[in-house]
Amino acid sequence: MKMIGFWVFLLFAANLNLGLAHVKGGDQPLAQINILKATIAFHDSAAISAYPLLLGLKGEDTQWITVNFVNPNPSSNDWVGVFSPAKFDPSTCPPVNDRKKQLPYICSAPIKYKYANESNSHYTKTGSGSLRFQLINQRADFSFALFSGGLSDPILVAISDPISFVNPKAPLYPRLALGKSWNEMTVTWTSGYDIDEAVPFVEWSRKGDMPVRSPAGTLTFKRNSMCGSPASTVGWRDPGFTHTSFLKDLWPNFVYTYRMGHLLPSGSVVWSKMYSFKSSPYPGQNSLQRVIIFGDMGKAERDGSNEYSDYQPGALNTTDQLISDLDNIDIVFHIGDLTYSNGYISQWDQFTAQVEPIASIVPYMIASGNHERDWPNSGSFYDTPDSGGECGVPAETMFYYPAENKAKFWYSADYGLFRFCIADSEHDWREGSEQYKFIEQCLASADRHRQPWLIFSAHRVLGYSSNSWYSQEGSYEEPMGRESLQKLWQKYKVDIAFYGHVHNYERSCPIYQNQCVNKEKNHYLGVVNGTIHVVVGGGGSHLSDFSTLIPHWSLYRDYDWGFVKLTAFNQSSLLFEYKKSRDGKVYDSFTISRDYKDVLACVHDSCEPTTLAT
Image (cartoon, rainbow, N blue to C red; front, side, top):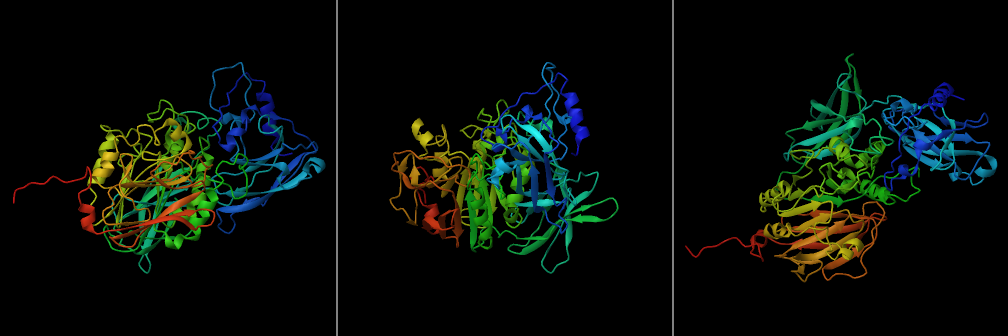
């Protein structure tokens, strides 16, 4: 039995009168584990081991491993937890003031888990089993612990020797994003190297050119940056270091190759794999441009772990569909509720690894959702605990987006024929607010001759949705959602407004003040007269019910996982497609065909003043 000395210390420490309260993180699968109540009952005949011991020998950042275990007293609720770092030492527990309670044996949640009987239906008779886990490089070693007692009353029976990747600190999981100018691309990645250990940079070039190097900035955050539990307690895990480099003065529509590097004091460089991307088109450029939009995807485990609460059952379907069609995608917008980590920080690494095949090739733009930002008394518009104590810090640190202030998650993005105005529904958007001024400025400054397709987006439904809970409130929207904004959408002739938060798909007619302003449903010609509102929150999380009553403005509803693809063929022709994640087929679509004069045309509450003077 390994690490016995460590656990002897634990048994001794258990006599101390210290304690911590366990705070659950909502529906997060890891929150089901009452890890602070864990006890120890090692048995000489119980054992658990994992192999291979050394991972990434061929440069892999993801690898499958096998865990074998034996328990002389098996039960149906035995489970195996994956811990990283391998030594889950209670000395890392945050300090407590109440000395009348017992010190917990374990104060950090595992990064994933499986039930012991998953691969062997006879486990409860034989007491032996074997499980397969997929591990990603997360800057630390791993150990595997066998528990009895279920999730609510875990009893530690055995623990394995640690296993590790060859270089746990390696630069990994690049995320591209548009910069603040059209000819700039940002590369953000994660590593275990602080700036006093190695100098981060990106080496990049057009194909055939000599490579150049651009420096990178480095950020991280600590436990005291979290606003509450579980992020500051059982869910805390060191996030490593986030690096961002700005690749400037790119030529439009060229393919560039890049790799991340860390220059060590010895002069040698630790390199990532080689990647490539296509630079953005010039604003107004008349070319084929393809955009993906969805919300609320979350993460899921390819090894099936953590899935017992059916938390994000469609996440891998959406991810894999996008990967399979990546040659026909230019940019992605994930409009809030990214990981559903809910305070379990290890899940951010899992998410960036999941989307890496997409985000390393095309810009992966994000918006802020309630599960990223909301926490009581933290400045969020909604005083709910939905972020699990993260209060926006991991999202703001681990992804780049071209906002003026990262804590104010609103920004504009120009991509060829498109202008995107990304709002932050977790901060006040009502008339008179700072964000309202930004939204109007973003819409008003769009050059509709060069960028005819004007898109608004926010996480919560600030427009129209016949989701069951909205219908019960009678508003068919987020409370106070469209009251202030609809006059801006109409005045500046927003083409489409996208939302997540509600986990389904729904498309409205072109609408203004709750009235359809165009009778067409699938082929819009000339002046459209109003904004089409689309809920596209079926990226992967558990689905949301519709109201039994279908409002007059609702043209298409789908209770399934999916995403939207916009294809701009030129300045006059746009194709909208809703695709299911399960098969990638189109289930709803429409087209807009118009000329510039149709964008300029006077419509209700959107007419420029005129004079009779000549």
